[in-house]
Length: 89
Image (cartoon, rainbow, N blue to C red; front, top):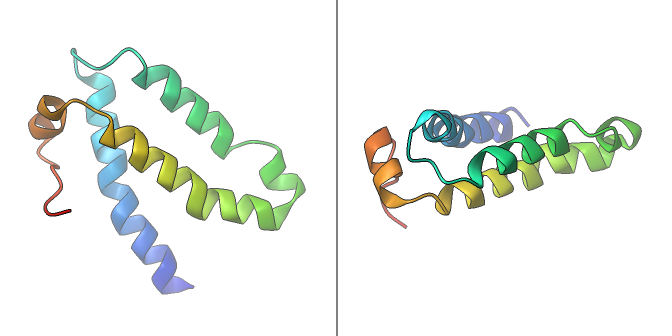
């Protein structure tokens, strides 16, 4: 379990840094801010607290995958300007 959490932190940290940079970038896409707010609201939804197992699946799988998908849709010049460009496939 500790290894899984460490892996999620290491991969999620880069995504969160890129999201923070993209949100402050003057040429960010118009959809980025509303999508980020919706993802944050989904991550803290009451369902996560009512059904603990489903909340764990949300927090560990669905939210990071949705964040990663959102960041893949960013224009290349924003990703390149952030300095956190991904290497490899």
